[in-house]
Image (cartoon, rainbow, N blue to C red; front, top):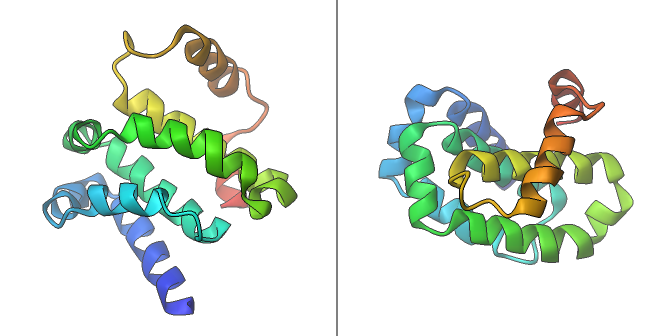
Length: 143
């Protein structure tokens, strides 16, 4: 269990360097992370690492293309609607829930064509991202 957490954390840190993203694309990391995001039995830390990896991949142009190819937006929306509201770890820990929700919103912004964003999502994301009291420093501290 500890080994899995450390490996996920390591990959999350490595993918923070956008130069490494093509390597992770070549080994099917985006597809695997999207599959893992669909699993219901992971804990909040594992979800946080996977979502962090997906966020880093989405920041790269080719990463966003690959994520779109594999229905990332659909999977992220499904995760937000199902797991984020049901998983006990997220219900108990509001801080981690807030960080995960923000990372998911950032992924949506990066991978979804602006014309495809739902009107209510645009308003929500604008309020969430631009008028949030959370700063990236605060988010980094929580992560």
